[in-house]
Length: 367
Image 1 (cartoon, rainbow, N blue to C red):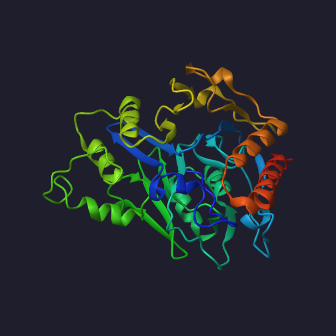
Image 2: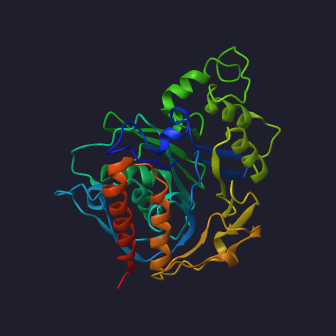
């Protein structure tokens, strides 16, 4: 879910388009050797975007929110430099280098969902990243959930959106990362009984489901198509069915049940075969692309395609070098649709669009 917490208006901006911030969902389907991650991005208005094949070997530096915010200041925030170790295939709203989620070639998935209770950490000596860039940082550098979680000691996200995150890897590990009362909260291993994440804090979701048969209680766990009935439970019931295989059809069936009319993108990654499927409300034909279709050796312009391209089946041939001009247009188009209030539209949105596009233009191959 893409959102701006209004700086010049009252309350949430894009999050308010969906009741009570109930938007987006991510689930992990695992049975036998099969392992898939499914994700819905929900909104009440159109959501433009790109699918980007990010190369390895790019030299980068962290970008705090204060650097991008035309009304902010980075102060003396510590800087961190790295060279991307892994290529990745991501879905991006704010153009290259600023994904909402994706999978890297080592088999690590990272993605965001709205959590309106989020409070980003303040203080401490960890390096800070604009929240979208933090997702790319994880995909650039780490191959497992364990490695990604260990990085919280030195690198943390921040920004205007209110998000929590689901991580998964091809070894079958998964974790949820939330930021509550200014501190990172991690659910992993025994504290993550269900690899599902929607838009409420993880612990209350798990506590609620304990009342139902099959989950520790006695109540019939009916999965009703009702936005007031927690979608976390709907997903848990569907994932519990032992007769259903963990395959793309099942993943999209679960995502369909979690859509109450506002899903704009549905995306499934197979972490074993390394394939990405996606479809959107604009172009509902199923598209897919294999990781092996791309050479992830360094190039200044990554390959990308419009997530809403009118295509079907294997779309590897639709990817083309993403020029700086095309990326600027993609970023401007994304910010154009965001509600940041009257003054925010004058001062905040143009500056954010300009600064995000410029930050991507400054990234090149390691010399």
